Length: 483
Ligand SMILES: Cc1cc2nc3c(=O)[nH]c(=O)nc-3n(C[C@H](O)[C@H](O)[C@H](O)COP(=O)(O)O)c2cc1C
Image (cartoon, rainbow, N blue to C red; front, side, top):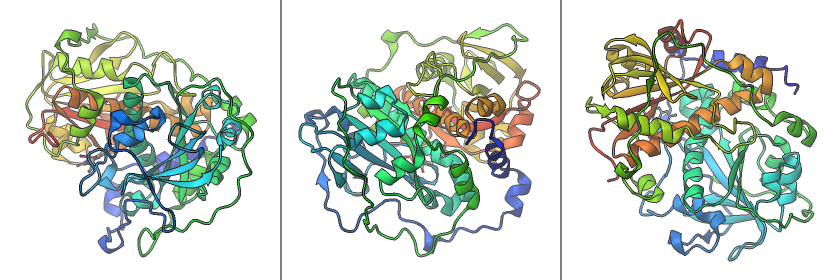
């Protein structure tokens, strides 16, 4: 894949855009009898149970995983939001010898909070090579790998499930970053890797299930030794559903955005092109975050456990201070191999403000560097907000809607088709942080889907040419869940 090759990303995005027309002409019907199971279950492997007590874990590498299983009772806790509650993201662990856990390649089973060993031995060197000697991978005692099993989401969302791969991975990554920060563990998200090598290590085919990102956890000065050979594995898993359908747009886009060699990866990663918004047409309104002394002191685990997507908003207002706090806390930068180290996002944030005390109702664009909002249009846009969210009341009843919108051209020029993965994932990680920030402040949040081109038209001329990557709604939830 050359970096100039980015036609497929444009095509994928265009062909999976929602419009009134595309929804009307869509003949796909949900077949509940064919609903995929929301887990990957190995039929022949015994689980190693993870300790339930988070604080007693000897290995920081497992903290993020363990946090997902703490409230295990009946249905396991799903710690992160996921489109359609279909849970198509799987997590694997590749580690050297850790206290209490032998070196190996493991799968984390969300259904029973267990690790299953797929391979015994230290395979981290495979990942060092696959990432073109990414330093954070070379020095990580443990690496998590997130994959998506596309059919598990495509059952409902068809080819748009490929966007959801990054959305639903991003909300998980936001939790992992917060957990790692809370125990002061070095962490770095890696999007540049030779897809085939990583997929082979996990014994997945890269078509039905494919690796999306790596997460380097921790730091050791002892570099991994040469890895054992990666032999093919035949590990049976439970059938997902009676029939499985293929969505060629997904596999074509995934293949077109794959990297083929360590050299290609090393040339690919790095900083995105710097960009600036046009100078504001109106005076900027600086964000006004709450004073640190006024912030609730709940731990990350407490917030993750009580998070849940708001199913209904009351229409009541957030304060400008709350909104400012959510934004500033979520926009501090993401440690990743292809994102801006200073936190400048690939997307711009466009807001429809409907009920924020201290901020006039209307539309705004965030000037991230200045931490300030530029007013675009004044007025009550509740009706439009609900329509843009695929005519869902949630969009119009929220206090504020935040649209992540990117000019894909410079991103694709810099990063080729794989830049599309990066832009989607970055937006979703920030959105995942907004989820956590909202719940940390005892208000509510939900991701929403949207009519693509109508959103762009709504925010134009300012947003002309930009694509919507994510929609996040924030507000006061009618019924606070999990509290
Ligand atoms: C990217 C994203 C988009 C979503 N879109 C919608 C939506 O359009 N409508 C909706 O009611 N919920 C939406 N949700 C919420 C999911 O349905 C919800 O996360 C899932 O049911 C799991 O519940 P939980 O978040 O409370 O754990 C979305 C969530 C995400 C992460």
